[in-house]
Length: 269
Image 1 (cartoon, rainbow, N blue to C red):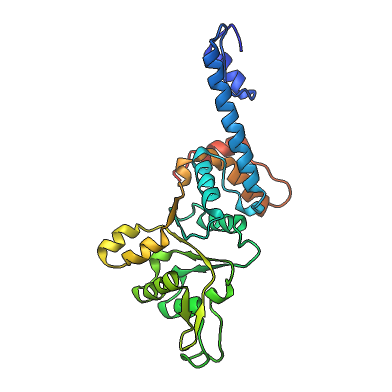
Image 2: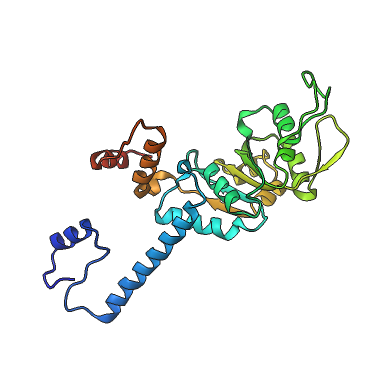
């Protein structure tokens, strides 16, 4: 606080680490309002640090208000066994959030298995998800467990769920409804004890209108939707993300300079 108020003084104080700026004389409600905001920021920082304990170095996501809202939703749903749909543009960290959800869930000691649906053909995806019996198709020389079996008791992450065909959607819907499935070419019914976290960058509602995505599957998947903001809407996270990548990929101890931070923030993310 100071009796000499000026823009220069305020800027200098904030650059030196001050949270806010008070001019004397001040009113008590004004001070209380600032203290409340400081306490809220302290509480949110504690929650972020608590969540970060469950993350590896490569899973740092950011500290912006937008990401704090995401963390809050993650905490709300992590201990439930409900299906979660992560929505956002490519590169917004959907798989990292899925891994955070798993690490905070009661299933954390069981496997987390990821399937990148958009990278596989319909036949391969069906086999990857549900497994196959020996001789069920050309090249099936032995029985193979699918991702549902491998994720038993844990979490199955279905990335780019909007890319799967209608026929695979039908089979996935059955698993969500009945917790049952069969391997490709098999007749034995297996039980799926997994929590499903799905992700997409597509507008599934538009796909429903176009007839390329099932509405009933959409509602089964989006029991608890979480929208991930693009980096252009949270540029204050750029320094911490850049530093995380430098630590992961850099040789030796590398830090990010202020000019580099400004350059990165100027890009059209």
